[in-house]
Image 1 (tube, rainbow, N blue to C red):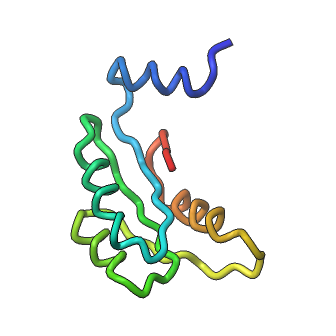
Image 2 (image 1 turned 45 degrees about the vertical axis):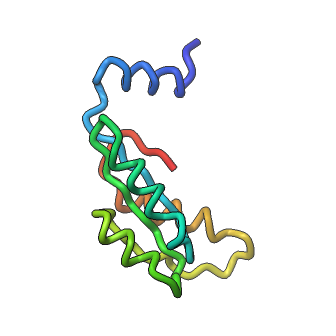
Amino acid sequence: MVSTNEKMRGCLVRGKVKMLDIIVPTKNNAEILDKCLIALNAQTIKIRVIVVDGHSTDATVDIARMLSAAVYMEPPSNVKGSRRAVACNEGLKHSTSKFIGF
């Protein structure tokens, strides 16, 4: 049986993937976000970067927008320890691709 990861890898190699959405949950990561987004934008396949921000107080959102990422704000959650999951789910709501990475 072929795993989902192997299928995805095969699709990427054979050029069957038209577009890949990458969801980047973040909060106050301005110092490293630019390196992440520049590396994603340099890929050879078409990537749509979706940044879900946890209400940063630094330049995270400005950097994401400057580097052409779609930016959405993380919705509030009352469940302790759920922030990353909430951010990923918010990114999924805005995803349009058949293939998604985190």
